[in-house]
Length: 88
Length: 193
Image (cartoon, rainbow over all chains, first blue to last red; front, side):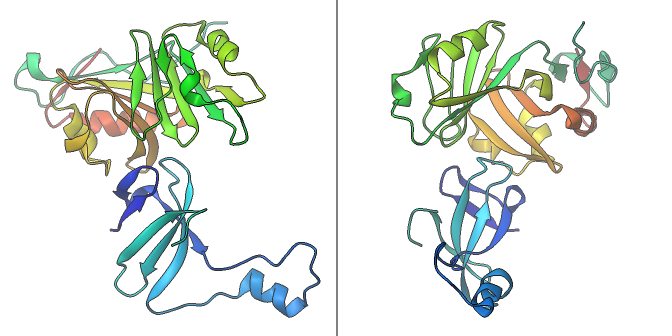
């Protein structure tokens, strides 16, 4: 069981959180023409790194806020959490 | 039309479980007729939340904090988000005077919540059986959103001398929550009041 530090509420059990995917994925610019391949990459393809990974989590049973987590996918160690407008 | 509480046909009065001393057991009750209002302060609003007073209570700005008077409690529910629980039936009118709809979203949730109150010296122990919050650091006028056996709940500590905890959940989860709590109480016995 992980203990995750919500940037708003403090340390809470993983039970209260929901995983929200890779935090490094960026949506293509709105008015920019992009290829089908780039769009496909944005929608479907994700890296599956072994080691440090930036993730989105939501404190779904707490304050309901989304935030960023830097986590090791091997040891599950959480290095840092940050609000969405902050740098990890 | 008469309003029916969520545990209307479920909650039973009397003594239950494996109690040894009737005077020291936990009491379980359903709190009815409370006004429960959620307030959201829009991010683009120019109004400072610290300037607003509701019945001489300020809106708490720190997590887990509750500000209260005799009949109204304002719980921090998240950033820019509060839950007001009040015995005052006219509280909604007062809120709407202070919080206009250009700057705040005000939602009456009174009909959609179940409120169970646990009172007794082992109240925290009951919740520890299904909730991951660190109750050793949970004090008077603290509140938290969490889970109890998978049900999302809001916990509000209203008294510290005789540990009194209010547990709020969605009305539709009321029956499950009630069974979960009374089941956890059976070990030391409880009094339904």
